Length: 134
Image (cartoon, rainbow, N blue to C red; front, side):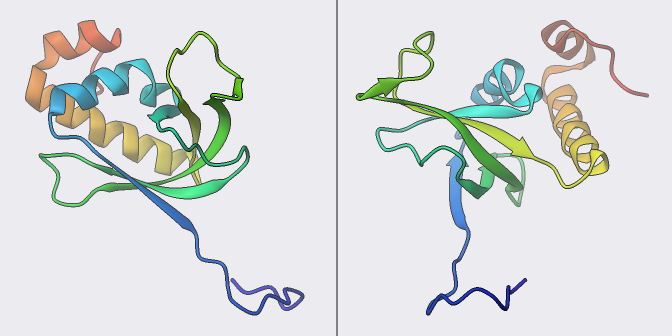
């Protein structure tokens, strides 16, 4: 959408970050620690400023197209300031922004299906600590 009050000479384009997982098990570990709670941590020496919104592309080996999610930087760890000293790495904490509960449910459902197909129902339920939706 273009704002008629916006006097910029050049339009802004959204920042796009791509995180690519080479192994499904790495994604599953990150999912169970972070992503299932609505966000993730991106390790980087140059985190984006707090409040920056961007498109987050999450590429997985068993998926032809990456997940495309909207994210916002909610905290950063930099050499000059560690907002989360409990996390000893430089980077940024990202909160996913879903347009609707339905969009969030679709993402979670698709990830659940991938995890069940790869790990089996029993291991998935132990890992996530919840029953598979029927």
